[in-house]
Length: 264
Figure (cartoon, rainbow, N blue to C red):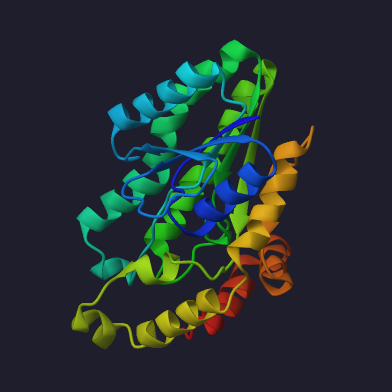
């Protein structure tokens, strides 16, 4: 199959590209400044914040292969901190990369898939797209947007043989932690007393989390499924349980549980 993945420089994207290429697929991946290139993978320089770059990347694959069987929207980033102290510029950037980056690519991928009579779209959300995480509100908002967009897209494109799958990872040990931009304003720490402890807990969970190769193996299987599920939560048992609890408990009860975890 011909597969296009966004953001393959590191983390999930790199592990997925490596795994799918080893599986025998023709893999194309976008990057902004890759320095270490995987053999067997075709790299395309493209910034998800540029509609022109997104269009050119899709066109390059279509010109070379004539189709895109699977599109995997992986590119993203995180901005953390108390929402009160998060700048408007950071809010715009968070949404522009995580959500609009997906929208830009799908704007050009969807017509091609419709014309060829089908395809699979895998979009990366997060467990943070299923619950609003304290001190990660901007990130959660961007992932909530992906959830809603894909829910609508799935219904709209079903008649064309296009399958839309949302991937919801928990904490993984990737470069995401080191690359997260967090509010550093001392006033934020002074006002929100639990911020420092919460940030430390978040980073500990991520750095000791599952390996990206584990997720890549799951994606490998999903890509080959004839009838994939709408959603896949890929995480530890504890994190999957948190999603279940949110679904069955009264909101006020779950808020207490989540708040206690984040020292609130």
